[in-house]
Amino acid sequence: MSHLPLDIRVELIRHRETAADENSTAYYPLLDRVAEGYFDEAKTPQEIYFLFVGLLESDGHIKDLETLASFQFALSVRSAAPRIEAHYQFYNTSVEPSLQGEQGTDCETWVSFGGKQFCSPELEDSHGTIKAERYAPTSKAAMPEMLTDTERTNCRLIEF
Image (cartoon, rainbow, N blue to C red; front, side):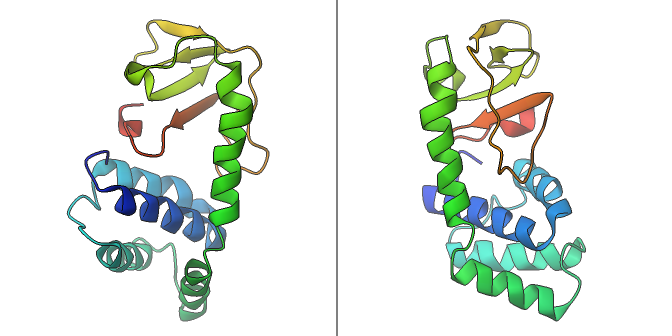
């Protein structure tokens, strides 16, 4: 996904979060589709929209016209934007300061496991300890034992 233009990556985040508001069980299957490259051929936000709506319907995440209309309305008013921005604010003010290792380009995507930061999916070498693990309380996709993080413009999440 990191090879996609920034506006496409941002649209995918917005679409996925909005869809999760309509159907909370859709979040991880949609994340899997993004990581698998389902949207890699999209070149414009409009193409993302049509691919995304088609996927929501074909994978059964949206089953009726009322839910589709609700999704479309929520997307048009950017209802997920405050939550997305709150997560970035939480990360920048709470998570990032608690990381003990140097945060360079070799660790743009990482996972927190057992109080340590790992930059590779093999969890072989710790990148450092985390002073105090904190999880965003409003997360639609809370993972109590393992927290993944990926910088907004670089997604290696499929490797984890």
